[in-house]
Image 1 (cartoon, helix red, strand yellow):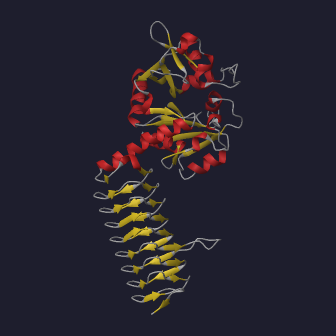
Image 2 (tube, rainbow, N blue to C red):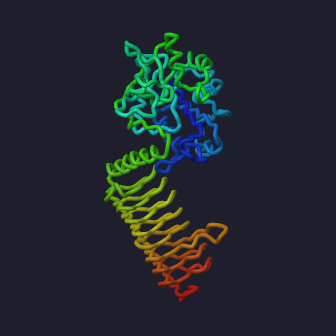
Image 3 (cartoon, rainbow, N blue to C red):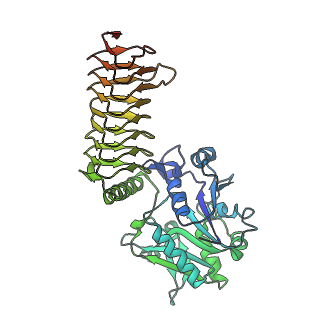
Length: 416
């Protein structure tokens, strides 16, 4: 999207979360909330992205540091959302375009909602526009105040709302679109809220209205597609929505999920078609699974692991930071950590790759066509040669590599 800058407000603490972690860093399906917002903004084609940080700023910056396109602006004193946006004035002084403002703790189910909102603003060329929603039970949200001609004239926070205003069902989503020319001069005119002693961005609506500036209100019927997070109940609601969306996307791409209600798949997971995911499977973010695999039930594949085509990962198996080759079977009760497993390998029930020596993680390599007997313990670092075998109950000490095609048995294991 040309000539649009996005400002994501991520400086607040989020006291209702009752946490030492900034609210925007609480995770949903493996990603912090703020990363979801950044991802949606980037999908819109917006190139200039500013994230305003404050409370425990280093944690937020570290979370997004890999994205070189983001500019971080610090709000040193948390004085409200209006003050946070004002901190961006210097960064945007030479920018010629419009400004989309989003909270870093909002979940946007479909990017189409924001695209339509931006198109509405472009079409009508308001000085500012608000994304609003109509709710049957609007408790907790700022209410949209309109005049007799249905023009938006104010946002009233619930703490400040009268009994009549609390009966209004149209609410604020905290997503705004501004023309730049009037934004920062008006922000400097904001006054502190009398109760919280902060500068509310919502108060800018009244200032615009009093000056006769054009204000648009783009209404969506259901807030379910744009959900703000104030507490962990909201976090669980978003988690449920997103989990279903992720699973549906995999199903439409040719993956069979036997029991979606009891399957958990995080963000940025790739699964090939004709793979079957059995119940009570947990797949963390950034996992790659090939075609024709069988995964689960009751297994966990941890972040960054990969499983190639036509492999089976069965009951009570955990794969951690490991690569599993094609046509490999790990069917029962095994822990595979920091391991490179080749093609056509069979790993017997109860196998453990002991990757941690108390100070450091070490790697195990199991080459193609190896056969690992039941209850084998492989103490890393160790290498199992191509076509090698271990007997049931063998313990292979670190650096006692098993040569290609050989058999090792016993405790400690010796090559026969």
